[in-house]
Image (cartoon, rainbow, N blue to C red):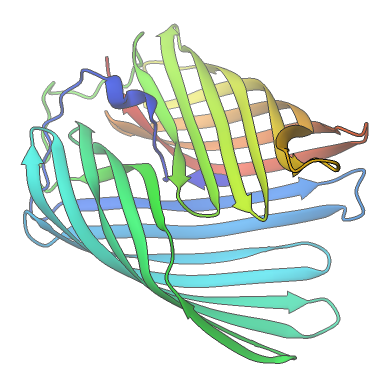
Length: 359
C-alpha cells in the first residue's frame, strides 16, 4: 500500500501559471506519508518482506509569517528473521521573510527525536535512539492558491545516537550533511474563495497531475518525478522517472523510467473510477576499479523490466487536488551482468493525494 502526500515535480518549474499565494494567519499546511508494501521473492532465500510507514505532518500559520508544526512517524518493516520498528517526532518552526509575487523565502529549524527497535527471531532486541537539531532554509513557489512547490536545504547541526543491545551500549555525536529536498505542499486557507460559483469535477485536455519527490546531499541522492497529462475523454499519459546515486563505499547508481496510461470513468462525477497500466525499464550500475590498473569505470549491475496494473477510485476534494484509493500489482524481472536473474512481485494498496494543475 502506498499513501503518499510527499509530492514534487521538477518539470513544473517552467509553467506560466501565476498563483495568488496566501500565507495568512489561520492557514494550515498538511502533508505526510502512508506507505505499505508486501514483497515476494519467488527465487530468493528470503521468500517475503514487508514495509509499513505512517507519517502525518501538520503545521499552522500563527501569524502571516510564522509557522509552527510537527510530524509523527511510525514504521514497521522486516522479513522472516527480523522486525524493525522506528518511531519519531519532529517539531518545526519556520519564518517567511520575503515574498516576490508567488515566491516565498523562509528559514527555520527542526528538532528530531527517534527510537528504533530491532527485534530478532529467537530473542535479543536492539534499541537505537537518534536525536538531531536542524537548520533549514528554502524557497516556496505557489503554483495555485492551495499547492506550493518547496525547495528545502536541511543541515543537521548536531546529531546523537545511542545504541543499547545485548552486547553493550554505544553512543556517538556528529554533524550531518546539507541535504536538498523537494516536494509539493498542500495548504488549507482560512478564507476560501469560490471563483466559479460551482464545483467542476471534470478533467480537461491540458490539465496536469503531478507527483514524485527528490533528495540530494546525503549518502543516497534520488530524483523521482511523476507527471500525467490529460488528453480528453478521461485519458492520460504519464511518465515516472527514477534516478538515484549512492555514495557509500562502492559507488552505485541507477536510472529508469516507466510509461503510464490511465483512463478515468464517470468524468462529470466527483467520484471517478480509473484504470492504469505501466511498463518500465531501469538499470543499476556500479563503479569498480580495474584489476591491473587503478582506472575506475562504471559497469552494469542489473537490468530490470517491470509491468504494473492499477485500479483506483478518485475523489476531488478541491479543484486543486484529489484523494484516490487504489490497488496495484507489480512484477519485476532483474538480470545481472553474470547471467543470473531474480524476480520480485509487489502487491500494494492504499491512498494517494495528487496535485492538479488546471490548464
